[in-house]
Every structure is written in structure tokens, then in C-alpha cells.
Image (cartoon, rainbow, N blue to C red; front, side, top):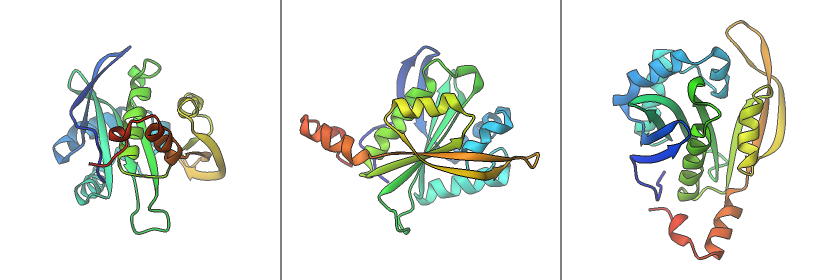
Length: 198
């Protein structure tokens, strides 16, 4: 996947300055610490439990193969958020990307999640994707509201779709966004550089 944006990039939020950079194998230990500090329920945003070292190592392998792009949010050199753009070039949906995102409890509600989701959205535009999806449990209302504010709309409800560590099942809501429409509007406004893959 290619993107028109360059990293590291710094953004001011209510939480202070946040630095975004592309995740590499060198970040593995810091991301593991971040994941282990997350509430278990938050890990249900992701299809795999990244608080397990072998799962995290497999994730880094996917990054190195170019199958996914993961962006880290850092505050004072500590990982406070991670956003991933997943795209399966060999599926029937190579034009669709999935956003997977988690943010530390201590920086929620103060702009970090919004800034991270906007960065991932920009990467999707640069990658030439037509559609984005995101999924989460139905009780994660703040996250749902955040993505709806970015133009995502509910498309599906998957009942009892994930099972947590205690064996309890949870419903998943799938939200979608037609990225191609955003790209077309930006091009109509004369902003082609913002949406052209590098």
C-alpha cells in the first residue's frame, strides 16, 4: 500500500502533542506493553489478541510483507494508540480496506482517537481504496459515535460474533464509508495531490 503522507508527523490534540509513525519490528516491545495495559474488552476491536507475543509477532510479519499498514500514536515516547489499515489484494474485495484501531484509556475523549482515525482515513485515500469498514462491539458507543462523525454508517449487525476471554459472546456492528465519494469531492475542489497515491 502506498500513501501520499510522510511520517513521522506531529499533531496537537487536547492531550498535547502526539507523534504518528509507521509501526516496525523495532516497536514490538512498546506495542506489547500498550496492548497489555488495555482493558480486555478493548481488544475486541481487533480480530486477534495482540497482547499475546506470538500474535503480535505475526502482525509485524504482515506489516513487513506489506499486507497491512499500522500507524502508532505516541505521547512522550509511549504508545497511546494504534491504527491499522488492512487490505486483502487477493480477495474479491481488493478495493475495500478495514480500519482496526485502539487507544489508551488515559487519552480517550481528548482528540487522540479522532486524530488517529483521520490519519488512517488519509492513508486509505492515498492507497486508492473505494470503501472502508470498521467493526466493534455494540456497547462501544463512543467509538461508534467517533466513526459516525467521520461519515461512517452502520451496515451490519453480527450477533454473538466474538467471544471474550471469559467465554461471553458479544454482538459486533460493522460500519462502512464510501471513500471514493470523498476522493471525488476532493478532486472536484482541485485537491488532487491529497488523494493521489505516491
